[in-house]
Structure formats: C-alpha cells, structure tokens
Image (cartoon, rainbow, N blue to C red; front, top):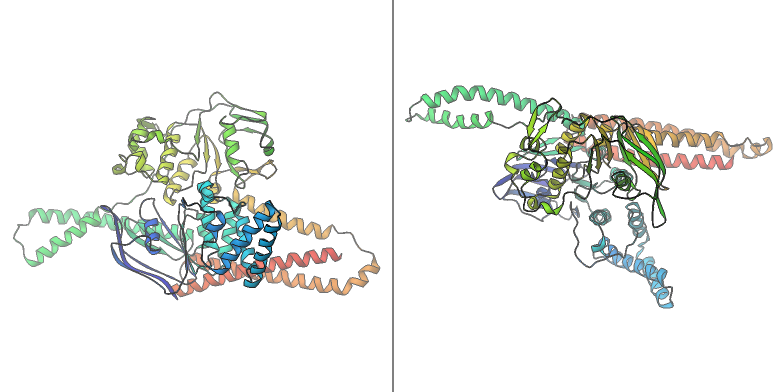
Length: 631
C-alpha cells in the first residue's frame, strides 16, 4: 500500500537549486532515512511533504485518510502553554479527560482540599467512562523515558533540548500512520535513543526521517535516500550497503567523467575548426557537445582522509585529577574521582542527561570550582575546548573567512605543508563561495561547525569536545572522524553518537547516578556487550547459588519443578531459533539485493521477530524467577 508518491519534484531557494525532478515513493511499513549535506534541502523536502512548504514543480501525493506525525528539527514554542497541553494538543475526548485528570491530580498533590479532591474524583470517573487509562499509562511511560517530570511547566521555560523532547513525546503519542522526523536523536542520551530504537522496531509505523545518527539509522531503517548535487539516489539496504554502493557510484562517475574529458578534448577541436554554417547533423553534434562538456566537468568530492594538522609537542605530565568531588544543591554530581591522563589517550564520556558529563569538562577547564580535590595540567598542554554554547554573538557583522583569519591566516599540516584559512574551511564543507557569508546568516549547524573549526585552528594538543556531532550531516561527521583519527594529541569526548565513539575512543568514563565514574577499557559497543554478558552471568549465578532443598520438600515440588524446567528449556530453544531467524533476515536486508516487495516483507518479518524475541526473553526471565522462588 503506497503512502507517499513524489514525482519530478523541483525546488529552488532563491537562485540556488536544492533538488531537480526527483522521484520516489514510500509504502506502508517502510522505514526510510534521508541523508545529505547540511543546506542541500533535506528539511525543505520534509516540509514540502508535510504541507509546510511548496515545491516549484512536480507532484506529491499522500494516501487519503492516513494520519501524519511530524517532528521538526527545532521546536520553538512561544505560546503560554503547559507541557501537558503541548503533549495532548489533539482535540479528542480522551486527550481532554487525560489533561483534566493530570491537572486535578497535580493540584490535589499540592493542596489536598475538598474541592480539589472532588475535581480529581470526577476526573477519575471520566477516565473510567472513556477507558483512557491505557493511553494515559503509555503517555506516562514515554514521558518518564524522556525525563519529563513537571508536566504543568510553561513550555517557554524549557531549554531547546527539553522542547524537542516534548515534541518527540507528542509525536509518539499521536498514533500516526506515517511519521516524518527531522533529527529525532538530537539532545537525547544513549539510553533514550536505544529505547526509541526498540520502540520503532516493535512498531509497524511507516517512517521517513532525516538523521545523522548512523547507529540509529542502521538499526531502524532498511532504505536510504541520498540527496546530492540536486539529484536523489536510493539504496535498498543498511548503512554498510549504502557506503559500499555509494563508493561504486562515485568510482563509476569518475570513470565516466574521465571518458567524457577525453571526448570533450576531441570535440572541442572540432567545434573550433568547424565553420559557423552547419548542417542539421553538425548542429546535433554541437548540441551533444554541451552535454559532454557538462559531464566532463562533473564535480566529484572526495575529501583527503589523511588530513591532519601539526600539533604542539606534549610533555610527560598531561592532566591529573585527584579525589575530585562536586555537588550542587546537596546533589552529588561527581564523587571522589581520580585519573591520570597519558600521552595520546582517547577517552569518551557517557551517561544520562544531567548526570554530570558537561560538568566534568567544565571542571577540567576551570570554569567551575570543585568542592574538594584537585585538577592539575602539564605546562606543555594546550587545551582546545568545544562547548555546547558555541561562538559568541559578538561575531555578528563579521564574515566567516574573517572570523577564521583572526585565529590563523595559514594552517600548518602534519606533513609540514601549509593551508590557507580558506582551504581549511573548504575541506570542512564551507565552500569558497560561502566563506563570505555573514555570521548572523549562518544556520545553527553551520555556526557549530565554525565553532569547531576555530577550536581546531588554535593548534591544541588536548581536545575536549562536548557533543560535537549535534546538527552535523553525515559527510561532515566522516571528515571530522578522519581528522580526529589522525590527531596525535589527547581526546576527551562527550557524545551520544555511538558510531562516533566506536571509531575514536580507546576507553570510556561511565558516569553513574550516584556520582561515581567507572573507567571502562573499550569502545561503546564493547561496553554494551559486557553489560549484556554481566546480566546473563548474574542470572545464571542467581540460579546456581540457591541452596539445595531438603529431599522431602523436593519430592513435594518435583512435579512443578519438572514442568517449569521443561518450559525453560523450550523457551531457550525458541529464543535461539528466533535469534537465528533474526540474523538471517538482517543478512538479507544488508545485501540489498531483494525486490522492493521482498525488502518490505523482510523488514516487517524482522520487526515482528524482534518483538516476539523480546517477549520470549521476558517470559524466560519470569520462568527463571519462578523456578528460583520455588527452589
């Protein structure tokens, strides 16, 4: 069943072509990712599909009677409206009674008067009459998952990240058939992102989303649309398949370009030597010459993957943290943390939102003072600190190139050669024609990228990066990853981007809720696998550590124990079978070789098996608990 059909769609932004005559369709149950460079039209295309913008030409058809849920990249609510009203904005009796119940409950908790009790009792009766408890329970679960506590708080008092979470909760509760999302993982911690992955895998909802989170993309989506140079390319497979096929496409384009250049040279000689009066055949050849010229000068962007700047030498003493303690309003953020950094160290920091990741960075940079403990750095250490605050608004009225030149006119590379500031900007995606843009005309993502480049230009030998992947497109992330892999100094990175962490860090600081920091040697995937293994071992130990019962008691419970044991064995076999089926389907999806119908069917089977597997594992745990309790 087709949900969306796009045919020959074109859009200009002023004189700039965003995309030209692109066509694609999305069927029910498909989960599709849209990727492209920043500023090439991803958000514009989503807005056109959602009816918030119009195309210059082409047609767009949405299936009748489908409900669409839309998540914008920036949710900027200026209305005087509570979180509760924003989440349950839909005008239905169920949402009305849920809002009334939540408001009445909050008022009664604050002031348990007779009037407030009566209001709450009436709301409870209304919830019963409309059978709204299941929906309310689902809403509470999602709100809790996204750490939204004060549901009566004014939306204007929330941060940008908190407003984005509210918009995400609203969309997930909309019960829409077709979800359109613009960067859904921004401002979420890893735990929230992983929960959302499981939610979408278990759901039959149709998705179209812009995302730079490659782990999220790879887990949720089975097709990728790429906008590049105004054209649309479709890849029916996972992210690795996309990378492979894109490399093949670029190689083929490069070969065709070289061939076109050879033909162009010979045709150019003919054009110069042929008289103006031409036959019909000659005119056709002249028209074809223009097509050959366009192909011969096709631009192929392939960033230098060995791009590395010269860093200052770093001494033996780098950074020492001794018995660090920091608390705020009697809440312990960091408790008795000590660590000595070594040369060339690459460390990631992960933890829930609000756990103290940014606080640790600010303590190191001496923007905050600890309650106890000491932080000392070596004399040769030059910090480069990329914060989430970004560049100062004092740069208004300045052009991009001038802001960069204030830091350095020339950049010395690791090879000993020099790059101009303009060449350095171009490598990181600021094309030469855009380098004279004024700071105030840059998008949020462009300002963050410029802030990062200013940090890199300061020639640091210890880089501290706080969420460097937010608002960057995948191509920029790839360039940044390649740059950081060749960076010879120390790295300390806070990020929710698991792909980014896996590529760059050797070990991680895991910040716990109690302020304790665990040092784990390995990347994020290794840490996740260890957690799963620890949980499995814990279960087995709990099973084996139970004391042996006396023979008489065992005889009385023999029948039930035997039955439970058989159910456990059957459950374990079912789990193994489902895991095998899931692995086979994942392999099929990664090949990308199936027909459109086969890929949709495999995707639906994968989601169904994943849901069944989760239920079987839960059943297995319950059986194990029952067996242990009986024993």
